[in-house]
Length: 602
Image (cartoon, rainbow, N blue to C red):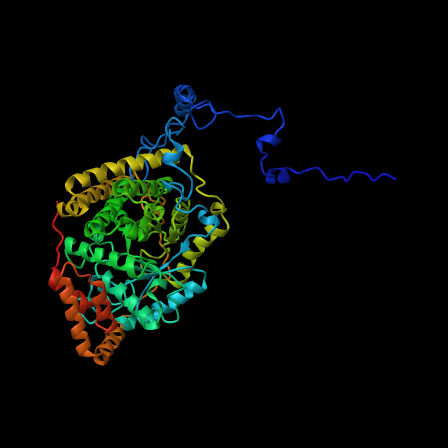
């Protein structure tokens, strides 16, 4: 008896959709075939095809668009990005012609427009690194452990204002500020408590500090030494971007040129002794928060980076010995596509600049690896729960832009440091994007979008014009001393504020859709008792240390600071290990290298 052929139920639409596309040799003779017209990248768009497309678009605008606009006039006379870039109504291949290999390439390959890793988030998700720090080291240690338990994958340390400025908690200048906007760290003892129970060789740590960064990095290295962890095994980042402090944030320690010497010492030391450490996080974030446009943030950040490279090369360092550990930090603001385009342009520009200007040979030297943070300046005190939506969109833009790590702001940060509940929502935002949205399943999903590619080119062009002007001034240090980036940012901030006050720019809940009565939200409040506790702890450290050892270590720091050819890192690590305080070390540097006041600009 013959067996019947096995039968199968008819294929459903869902099953058909899941089936991978057929290869060319599997298609039937009647299958639709597309051909390249000869010189373009798709569907007959060679020069003739592009010309035909331009004629078609012109006819479309003169016909259907004009007719529709007569019935429904445009919502605005001008459509612009958040930075003021005029936005076209429609982008086509005629607006974004390109040499694919030169402009885009493939992920993990020069010029890295589509990402710095070949597999991007298919291999490893971005690091979820929530900025945290408040009160005493004990309190922040507890927050660190909470965040790690909730799925955070890296630490990011916020320091209080006295620490950021190089002053101890018992300084008269610190009164009322200890532990208020970050954690107070005065000595190695505080670092020991801050990272108690946290394996430094397994968790990477970012430290957001600039002027006194050399001291805080020394504390961290001294802690690893004390625990017996080889320096080559600790990983992390210290912001250490002195130039952006003079441009935007104003938390400096010494004048620009001595500050550049200290940063160069740190880059040189870390390349040799702490190879997994990012010795500078070249930061556009604070430039954008001060009021710059996206193109200005892009230009001034990369120009800062070029200044650090130039300083190291002038010292005699090979670019490929240190450039792989230069990292970046960008703001992710409200305009969704502009922020994505900015990150893509940044990677392409940095790769070309390092290769063409400095002769970098290693791919790792040309890769712009970046941390991103949602825009603090976009958060509103009015209707604070709206901030959850803003942060979600900004975080999605950061991921679609290809960031390597991300901090998401909490809804209450216009009022205070975040509560445990609000910071959990901010972390969950990243986790939902990672595991529920599907955007991490493919690489650079917006690559090839005519609008995104046009906007990427547009921001790159504007940023390169700024960099050329800075080069003509003699580089970024000279430009800062001349007040150039400061004036440009101030003018942009003024223009934006005028747009907001005239209702040309809308912020929901601020100048439109305002609520009659605002509801209060829970806030984290720092007890002023923190200062008393911290000062008592500091007094105990000072009383129990070897005073002769401290004096000798500080004398060595002074001698190194006086000698331009001596790297200041080793004596500062020795001083940290002797429990010299942050201010004691910083006072030596201020005394030898001088202090700085911002020049008035009108």
